[in-house]
Length: 133
Image 1 (cartoon, helix red, strand yellow):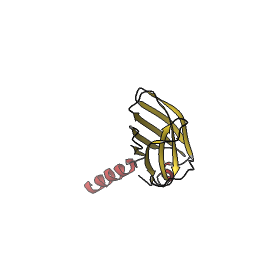
Image 2 (cartoon, one colour):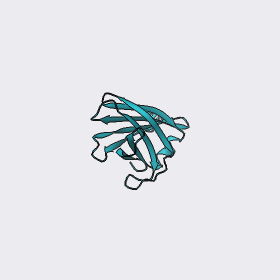
Image 3 (tube, rainbow, N blue to C red):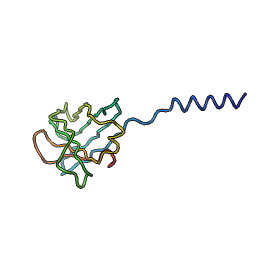
Image 4 (tube, rainbow, N blue to C red):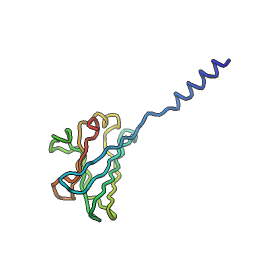
């Protein structure tokens, strides 16, 4: 009887166990910009939810962010996912959006998150995402 109860407890625990469905990536300062942050990617059905948190030493800036193909030290110009012109309140800029890629596929994506001022090209922060964590 104890074995049956123990077996049922283990089965119910295994059934309730959830896989981690959120990954947070670090965005490091680039070009002495004093800008850094994180991007969190979370499973959301057949899509992925994206949450950027950008911290800047200068208040009220506006940013663009992109997921470029390739690793941080050699990413390509093509950016299949772009988030344009989101602003900071004080020194913190936040953006929440979704992208058309399943979370499991995003984890295999060979990509780099890149942040720059809205409409400008110098990179302010970047970090490997997907399989480049």
